[in-house]
Amino acid sequence: MSKRQVAAAGAGSDTSRDSTDALDARRGVGLFVGRFSMVGVLVLLIAVAMTLYPAFLKPANVSNILTQNSAVGIIAAGMTFVIISGGFDLSVGATYALGGTLYAGLTLQTGSAVVGLLSGLAGGAIVGVANGLIISRMNINPFVATLGTSSIITGLAFVYSNSAPFIVTNKPSLVPAYQTLALTTIAGVLLPIWILIIVFVIAGILLAKTTYGRNVYAVGGNHEAAWLSGLRVKGLNASVYVLTGVLSGLAGMMDSSRLGVGQADVGGNLALDAIAIVVIGGTSLLGGEGAMWRSVVGLLILATLTNVFYSLNISQNWQLIAKGAIVVGAVSVDAMTRTRRRG
Image (tube, rainbow, N blue to C red; front, side, top):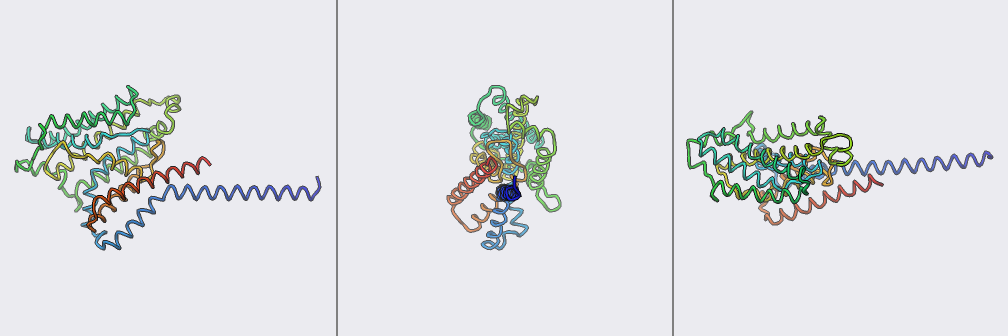
């Protein structure tokens, strides 16, 4: 080969290498944008909120935002595990209502808020076990299974309450203990906010830093491969529903404590709100990908948007439209990110 041919071959190799490097760089930028795009949306939304509503970042308003969204945030933490595992849970709203109903009902019937609290947590755990067994042992689609159990749970809550709310405020002697869960303050911060933070921190560590969390990712990423590698797939699938059930029951008791009432006909939109939070944050509906910090971002986006809309007296109809548009946009970003990754 002549020197000219060698030089031409080297130049062609350099050109090809430059082209590959440029493609890799573009792909890296695309993945970075896809990974952190919702953080940018949150920052932009907060800036707009501060412009439209100057009191947005005042401590009282921030406390109000976090308190009002603590219940759905706690449910979203559990839903993150479910979706990463490749599942779906439409029964969280009904479990939320059941938790509040049991908390109020057993408190009134036994005179002990502690008994009511334990019953609400137990009710959520039982629902989670039932969902887990139906989905993992009977191999029923999670969407169908939890849609069915949601109806059953709501019916049981109505039967237990005789289709009437349990009004704890009618028994003044029980009110202080009953509302401890909602009105206690620690270092000037309400207990529901502390519970929300603790749940997200523990859930984040569990998901990102433990063998259990890695196994949940593995099951969601490739169910068959996880089974072939020796993981207890059915047990892992069931466990995420138990976790979500307990958290949903806790969320219901927190709101019931704040209102002083437990009733079976609440929480109708909570399942969709929790799923929206997880998806908006960037966790994939296909399973195997996501993170707890993403759900925190999703929660803050929806909470900020809702607070601004209420402060500006904007109709709830527009809130629904905005929420739907954000969910569609988040899913679109996820789809584009996966396309770039495959490319």
